[in-house]
Amino acid sequence: MIATVPTAPSTLSPPLPLVRLRLAPHGALPRRIDGVWWPYSRDLLIQLPKMLAALPRAWGDITGVTVDAAAWSAAPGRMFVANQVVRLHKAPASPHAPDRVVLLSPGLGRWDLQVIPPDATEEAAALLTTAALDDRRPGADGEAPAPTAAAGPRGRVGPTGRGTRAPRW
Figure 1 (tube, rainbow, N blue to C red):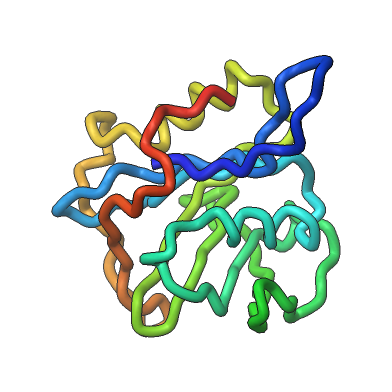
Figure 2 (cartoon, one colour):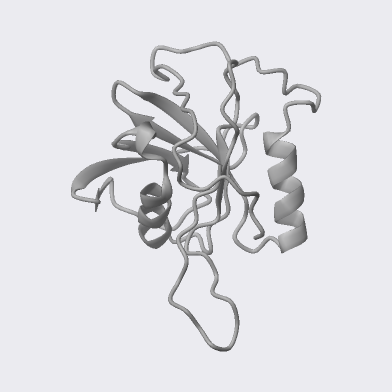
């Protein structure tokens, strides 16, 4: 599933989507990666609200976001997004999950998004997206990592009608 929000029409070239986000297809088994996000910059204050607005409604209100502390610009511990407070947690990147954003929605679950570097080429972004979302690749057998007390439940959602066509970054 893809969620993109188009920019204002332009007569010179086609508009770029405000959010480059591709979510993994819904399945019966849990996944290690629930989607891929390709932000336009490392400015979390600008990029995060747009990405959160593009998420499926079924994911509920995201109230906590954990990001790689070294990968993003400075940001406060909280942001006001879509009439609610979102707590931002900055943590060191895990060697097993290099650039990932973790989204938490109380009572609904946790979603992990692989982040493609903003300066990646379209071709590199397509390869990274395919690799992150391909269940047939080695190690992507649908096994979720062992749950931890802090992680909470893993959320899974079905189609929400917010776009189902493959992205053309």
